Image 1 (cartoon, rainbow, N blue to C red):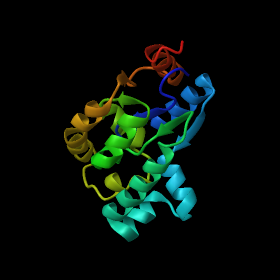
Image 2 (cartoon, rainbow, N blue to C red):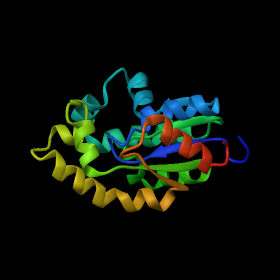
Image 3 (cartoon, rainbow, N blue to C red):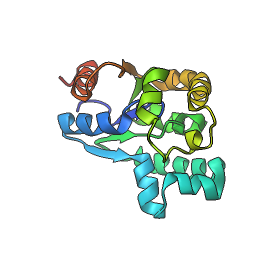
Image 4 (cartoon, rainbow, N blue to C red):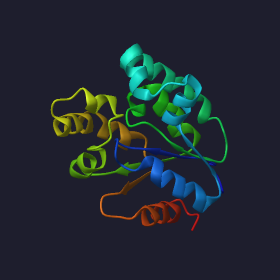
Length: 173
């Protein structure tokens, strides 16, 4: 890759950051890293357990440390957690150290993609997951857009077509 050597995927839960990130990394011959998976590997605990024990603040502290470290690597595709953009330092790390791709998706797609997933702490505790997703979108969409170099809709597109669209938009195709 010419110029910036990293691609950082941001967006809400259920947008496909991990799935699309793996395909994108394969297309570009880069290493794939998922910040949530990295936190789980290092703590030996699932994200929902960390939320239960340390609360969202404790989790966000861990997330900031991991994102600071991972964004300093070269040649990676990084899938971030949906809330990574809440912390201003994370936005600075992401925007300054790579190409930021906002994977945009509809609330309907998020509901469908997260419906059976029992490991999403912000939805587990919600009586109305759809209302929670709408609220998170309202709070976070402007933060995603603030740092995004590229915005790609994932709704009706296949994993490969989204990855190909990203490759063409960053000028690697």
